[in-house]
Length: 164
Image (cartoon, rainbow, N blue to C red; front, top):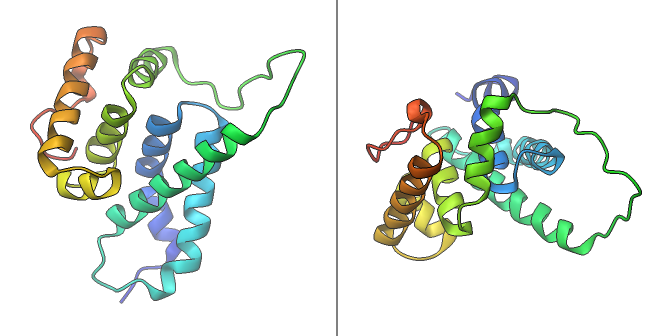
């Protein structure tokens, strides 16, 4: 028997937000992708099999919503006289990590987001991003190595190859 959707949101909200922020950056687009992820999930939840991997399913939806937000971002041009304030500024300690993650090449950033933050196995990451399992492992390894060189407080990073 499925648990209530409200409980699904409570259990996986932080993971989905981390994935969205790692893919899109720490701004409101990630928050929008997070919201769109759970709206889409709510619509599809009744048809989801009872034994489905909930976290992997949500991360896959978040990946697709992040792609949608990226496409929309490329189409919109909003000229403003002043840069608006951020709705949810990150703490200083996290800002350095997000900057370091944001400077990674696209495939490395997404691989780290989906594997280490989203909990997906490398085979599923390879399926989402295209390529092989070995290429996904290599991209994650290269990304973690780059983060270690530029971001020294690695207590939140798991480099054993196991998600979180």
